[in-house]
Amino acid sequence: MKKKALVTASVASMIDLFNADNIRILQQMGYEVHVAANFAFGSITSQERVHAFREELRRAGVTVWHVPIPRRISDVKHILKSFRKMRWLCRRESYQIIHTQSPIGGVVTRCAAFGTGGRIIYTAHGFHFFSGAPVKNWLLFYPIEKLLSRKTDTLLTMNREDYARAKKFHAKNVFCLPGIGVDVQAFAQCDSERGRMRSSLGIMEQDFVLISVGQLSVRKNQETMLRAMARIQDARLKYLLVGFGEREEADRKLVKELGLDGRVLFAGYRSDVRELLHAADCFVFPSLQEGLPVALMEAMAAGLPVICSRIRGNADLVTDGVEGRLVDPLDVSGYEKAVREFMRNPKFAEACKKNAWKKIQQFDAGRVQKRMQAIYANRVEDE
Image 1 (cartoon, one colour):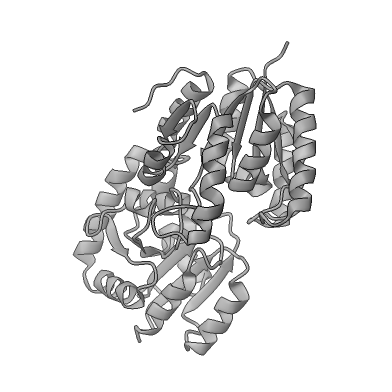
Image 2 (cartoon, helix red, strand yellow):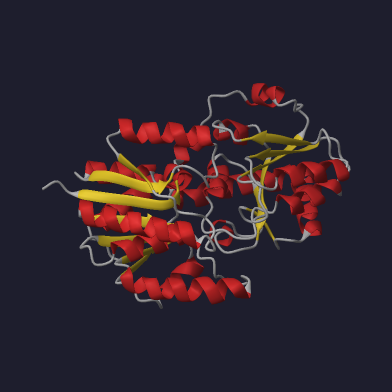
């Protein structure tokens, strides 16, 4: 009988962005791979990209299942509907490996798959309970994750804080991965000419360009960076926002209120992030919450100095004054000071670039892939 593996998440974009390598590894190990997620709504990429991704999976021989997993825990109707479909699917297909992630997707899958005979692997890309998290997060998510760890054979974390906490749970195995990895060499090299890319964006050679990559949201906290930028009255300073999300309209309105028209560029969803990173001078990442951010790893691999929030995940990648600057998430004056420092001190910026490149070698995708293969084969020990 052919071996089967199921990879699940709440939404399709999470499979697309974080699991392509995992699917390929499972296929190389001889598994027939199925994917289950919400392909209709909730993704952080465009719906066009979701449709294209679904076709890419099918062409690669992956069986795709649409399960209407919601992103809101209050959407009980769709959670129950998703549980019933996932339970039917796990019983019908008899998977040997079930690899799930995302809070609600992880809850639905683990409850549905428990007792069906498959080995359950859960990746926590970042627990919603963490040092400094709202009390409601601790009251809701902490007991759920601790309870469901009893239904988890292998629990994978992405940062030191989550790993220390998960070790106190009840999963049979707990490992800490260096994220999903980043193709360091690919992001270090860029065929696109920096000047041509800047010109296409209306950016002058003498401009100092900040760039953020990610969903425009409260969690990603671009508002704080916009307010910091407004304090620097230098027309050469530009801010490139790559991504879209529920905060876009509010951010555009704020740009007008702060008098930043012409200095803040909304690029939307882009498939040429690597080229955009090489056209910038500094990566800024003021998130309120992260697991181990891919966008930050990619920026470091592209050789950018970084200014990011002093939070779990970011602090696993950046040491203040070494690879860049760490700033308290809502400290507008702290971001302002850090930007001014990089603009005025190119030697410091260059030192941070070199240190970032050196640090990110530890998070190379090749290393993560070898570890995931060992985890799927159930022959890995903790490091």
